[in-house]
Amino acid sequence: MTQIFNKTIKSLPSKQTLEKAEYEACVIKDFDINGINLSGYVFIDCVFEGCNLSLCKLSQTAFRNVQFNGCKLLGLRWEDCHTFLFSVNFEKSNLDMGNFYGMKLKKTNFKECSIREVDFTDADLSDSLFEACDFTNAVFDQSNLSNSDFSTSNQYVINPSNNIMKNAKFSWPAAKGLLLEFGIKVE
View 1 (cartoon, rainbow, N blue to C red):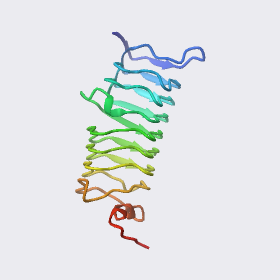
View 2: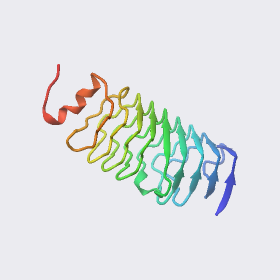
View 3: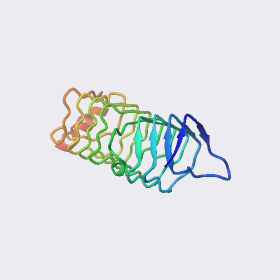
């Protein structure tokens, strides 16, 4: 597989695809590669800026210490990625309708993201930061949320009896979403 190291790769109007390769220490900017097959690609210490990767196939795609800034990442099945050293962080990105089922996401940062209808079932999100995120219709079931910070986020509905939540941080009034599963109304 081709190796591409320490480059800034910008989208060209005539070229909206990425060469299948191992990318290391690269900045990938402004690509609209929605729906393409990224299976088997490797990204190490890379930054995606302003890219659209919605509905891309991620079978055994490796993301190792990868940052997504201002990206559109709709409907991605993150659980299909290669899990060895998987590490991602998100800022001002749209992750709606994605799936992180069973993923190890310990110490992941989600800053100012839309995380609507995302499935975090059985995911390890311990020690993660969710800063100013929207969790409308997101699913948390059997998830490890211990030491995670939701204090500036909103619209989450989390059942404390179905998730590990020791030392997780929440703030009022969004914390009402912790009581909905019990049929408790707080005014």
